[in-house]
Image 1 (cartoon, rainbow, N blue to C red):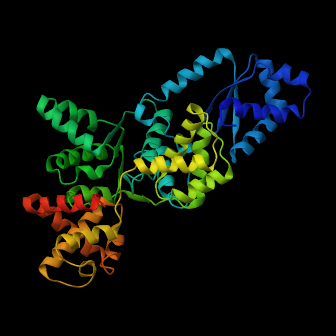
Image 2 (tube, rainbow, N blue to C red; image 1 turned 90 degrees about the horizontal axis):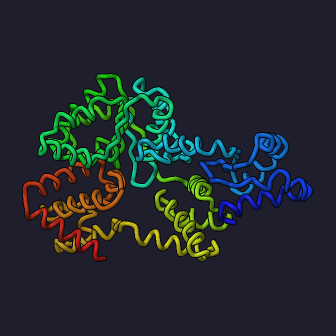
Image 3 (cartoon, helix red, strand yellow; image 1 turned 60 degrees about the vertical axis):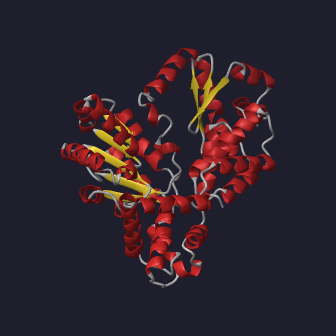
Length: 435
């Protein structure tokens, strides 16, 4: 029972226990499932009369069956043939900004790890420019920052379609700026991003260290902010941990509201799995949901990737969705994911490169050679993993936040000024990735 028709047939089975075959034929023979949109099953029926009867007499039963299937609140809607075109056109209109398609607040699963960021995003969407400006959302990759960012855009677009919205990623801002300078269209570039009602910037960390980009972004930020319009920014870390971020930008980012997102707990992961399965019309057993939630713990994108993989197994290969299929899907998704080395590997390989022992880097040895190796290991942990400064410090006998940040900044400066340091970093990174 994983396809749209399977789900509808399950509803009909329950109705058949309550109704005569004649009643089923009369009211449901030409009732067909169209799609699942969020937590709503969209159906088509032939007349207004039938729609009224189905809704009034059988609506509660249909909702209860759907809620049982998907282990959560679920609704249905009935459309007439003449309403299908309008329904389709409204869906297209909602995706005028293609980046935002599918990203809505009702598809975002709220848990202890993200409820503050979610509440802040909703408040900004409901009252843009009035409070929490800028809103700065940060956290590791794959936890839902972009989802909240684009949900704000989607909400404002739907409720105030006249507002001008621009979405861009940090590295794309740099690329577009450079291109505009080369082509002599810098003024058009500035007008595009400075004259907006809502400015959505994803992965702002990529502009750190790029002087010209940061200067342009500073003026763009000021123009939008001083006009009373809303700015929302995401990053993989808070501004204070961006070693090469211009101080002018850091103070502006920190002048708004900063909200972090942490990895979801197991209850939230289970809810995310069920929600994504519902969107794709896939029904999973409790055993399957539990297994996925216990084995994918830190990355929502991987959770969603597993569900998509299982949907493909069902639709393309006609496979049974059992635990073996779940294990195979998890292996496929995690195998294609980016390799993230363990802290021990980074310390071991850095120590080996300098002819030292791992204990030398972790301990209090302050010789020049050991101190440099320790700083490089801290830098590599920051660039190759998602560890926070606090977590990195814990790997080196609980060195404090300031010490770790200072070490990272020193190596970043050396990479830019000393080609030998850049070569050293490349060599150690290659050794780490070969493990």
